[in-house]
Image 1 (cartoon, rainbow, N blue to C red):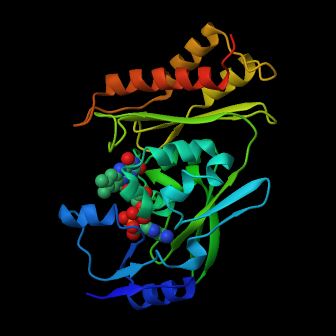
Image 2 (tube, rainbow, N blue to C red; image 1 turned 90 degrees about the vertical axis):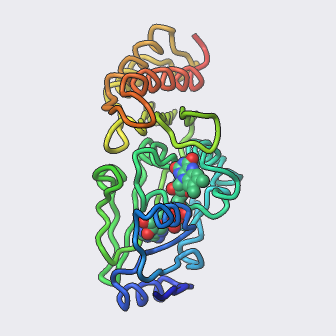
Length: 281
Ligand SMILES: Cc1cc2nc3c(=O)[nH]c(=O)nc-3n(C[C@H](O)[C@H](O)[C@H](O)COP(=O)(O)OP(=O)(O)OC[C@H]3O[C@@H](n4cnc5c(N)ncnc54)[C@H](O)[C@@H]3O)c2cc1C
């Protein structure tokens, strides 16, 4: 077994071509759990947590680029938290401070669990995921990147370089429920993003389907029925929005929850988030 600590993208690609079966490790907070549980056999390791190109972010006014190695601790704090509050709120729910200190957004994307807390916000923001290999770079909308539970469009030899998200004017929020209040995997989660300039409301659900689900009917209903200028939504609009979110869910029963509870929970969370986004009646 070899452990290669790459300090540049070039080194990471060279290590991957020398060890095509190697496991990429950023913070290791998903990988090590899988190894300890015997669910993953690791031969060689390529560490990417010291690759400078992955650990940086750029903000150019309209857009924010987050390198795959940006940690949840960075995302939950200013200035990133001010530009993408939905991701900051999600970041604050990931594990504990120790996990957030090393766990990365790229690792959340690499695992791509429907319960990954970073993913509903990325879906609601229409994030673009950037991938690269020695053969070149490509970019995919999040909806094309996540193709199933823990399945992505990434091919062997590719690195997740980062994500680009828009910096929008308008309220954003993330809520999740689990079997306890902290250090918990979501049994249902909801991200809501408003765009006051585009007059849109985006809603994405986690843990209630094989992938993160965008609720296009609820979004269209909200866009047509909320009062963007006055930050207002009637009780009837909030209630119908919640019902449309429930209808969009495709939950299953498993060891964490029942499908029925999950469907109920996303309705409650979606309604609450819409009310926070549009506090006036
Ligand atoms: C105690 C505990 C609590 C947790 N709580 C939560 C929680 O509340 N919410 C939540 O969403 N998650 C939680 N997690 C899971 C984990 O912390 C997150 O998914 C985290 O974002 C993973 O990031 P990482 O850098 O540690 O990933 P790693 O474990 O290093 O990697 C995860 C996967 O991504 C791949 N990968 C990493 N970087 C790249 C890259 N640049 N390109 C291609 N592939 C890459 C790896 O090969 C691996 O398959 C928890 C984990 C633990 C141990």
